[in-house]
Image 1: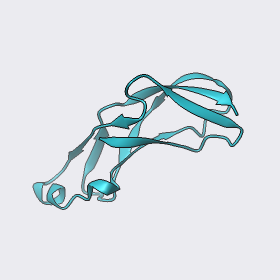
Image 2: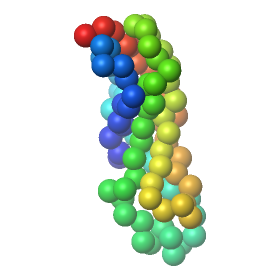
Image 3: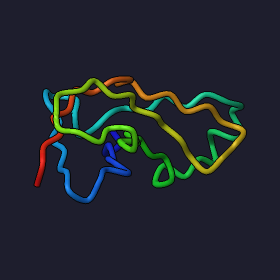
Image 4: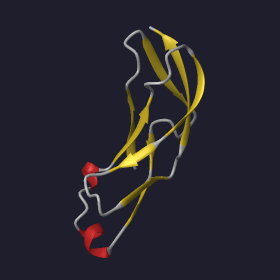
Length: 88
């Protein structure tokens, strides 16, 4: 499992995930056998970009997965997470 990273939240806001899948997800990696054999698992990330969420509320947001090998495709098992954004 990979820890989900919340990014680009306004400095006056805080975020809290709702449910069991709000902090970690499995990431499915697709590609050639050779590329997968050399995969550095520490470079695989799952990210939620909160840049467009500027006001408090409850939202369902997309989870994106990525890694450092462009020959591979990274797909998070959890594709959406519910979060609550509030003022600090």
